[in-house]
Length: 474
Image 1 (cartoon, rainbow, N blue to C red):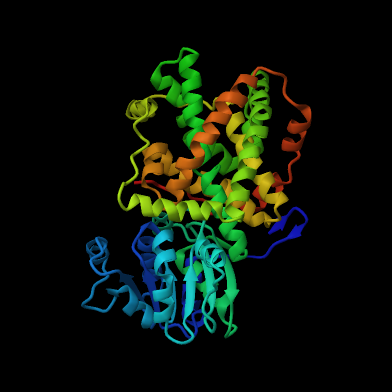
Image 2: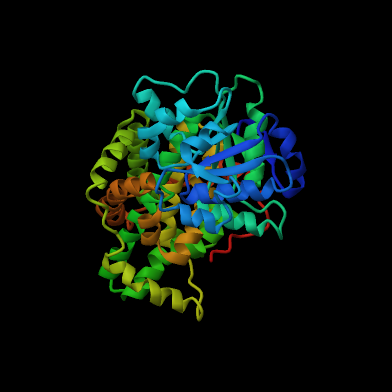
């Protein structure tokens, strides 16, 4: 892949590679998927289906009394055929153990899981959270075990839905990053790439567990979820105060971001958003962009620092103890969300044009995250996936179908806690700093940095590898 500063090697996926999986999984005859959350449910099913007819078996491991057992059985994993069992028993009997339980549960129980591993088994992760937790305690993964990560750049429902669409369009799926943290037998790269191909990833790019953890946790608190929530709440209030009725205000804020704006970026890139306006619209976009970029960049940098030094990780673990006695309330009770059903009904009768104010602020926040990741040394493939592709090809389509509030209230606990903590910070920055400045002249230097940004080249390279299919949200 041709990116700014050179090239990166990625592996293109596709079902034509499935016959190679048993060889790539050499030494692995049982894959244990521990957990049945959104990623566990999707990954176990994708792996099972991709490996059908081979001698590699996929087994789901759950804690005793898990409420998820019935759903796992409903999807074909059963005790009777040995594909569903106790989490520690499955761990002990597996050659590749993929840990997909909640982050806080993993922080609490990882020592029991490590103790149950069979000699030489490979540990698989889809998130770097555990690495951060171990380092915060001066600990490490157990010696003698491979440690690999395959991290889909989308929510679990997207991982499964696009895999199913791949039966009709070869290569349809969610991109993944992969990392090798420990490789005692020299087969870790093959196993990680096989895992990613079996999930249906259109392409797989290399990172490190450190880099993945930082970019993933920062991204879900910023443009992937937290900033989107703060942005649409701020814009909805702004448009209401300007005289819009609730439905129009929702269309100009939330509907814009999750619908036409996301589609434009997905199909044509970030620069195409600005280029799609007439002179007046471009002027409004430019003023909004330069008003929002600085405040957004400051918060993204703060998030990055708190993730890097462990503050954000500690806040998640502490919150889990509180939530055991007092569950989180839902955020979807603010007045703007009541307009959602009417807006979705109106989609049938009229298209919604991209609003330049909303587009400028969203694009500025996206670019602010990109720039922070560039400054911190992340590879371009990771930057564009974590800052753009995951948003427009996975998360925003789901938000379009069900609402941003629904996503915040139903995502992983780690992401939900992060969005609830940082979303209001973004909302305040937009309301107190960016929106009061949108009538001031645009900053020419910021606009030049955007129009000539190397991210456009990286996105174009990634777009050339994108399957010709959009996710169909049920």
